[in-house]
Length: 135
Length: 202
Picture: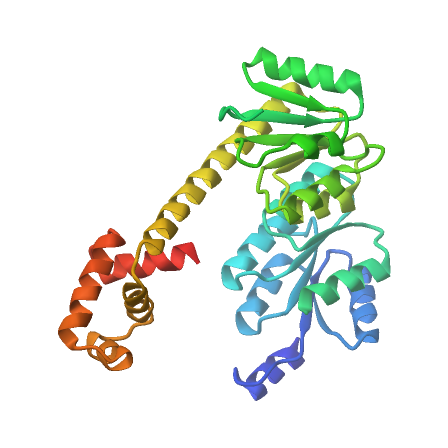
């Protein structure tokens, strides 16, 4: 997190900041594994415990993509997505859901989600989705 | 086939489903036409007919998603509702991202489908109204003389009359006359109105 803020300040707004992915999941193991997965592809990531802390961070440094659990400790992923997109219009948001519920997936995408994946997700599928989102 | 009234196009390979859906539409007074395959539907579909599409996802031959792709490529914006017996999230996500109006999983309540169809019909009406308005503005542009069109483009780009006169090698007075005719033909009273109209049709 500190890294991201620092690089944002250093580059100011004139230079292209390398793509950063923000991750929020109440299960830290999941967040860490995604962070690691992205790191292997040279994509920087920052992990957050809950929606509010991710929302705070976005006001300081805009991510290129966000990966959210459908249910966080303080709010739903879709609600957080709507709040994030008020700050950063068109921010790609990938929702990770515990249930294979088609209506929830449809609602999320209609509300502006970039993608909606079921847990356990296939690493390559998530990676592809993040790559397409940040390109 | 096109008589101008809104129609629910049903595409499903299962005859029992087609009959049930057709009966449901009839019961609420909606005009419906059923097709046993996407190909059958495509061979008669005329985009000028208002309505919406209700299609099964899994069908022998062309699938519902293939049908969506074909309609998109044809430039059709008919609202599409997909029905699937298998709760397949990647498929639903793809269909919605490509602009499907909705994606229902079986079993669903009749009312859910009817609500969906109603909102799809409203969307179709809205889209057609916008298309009509756009076509109307385009017709006005087409009625402009070559000079008036040049003046329109320059005015919209924020060029002053004096600059337009220089650019087109005309007198200031002539530019004023072209501009006034152009505004009249475009049926706009202010520069702001003209600019927003032109931005809207782009």
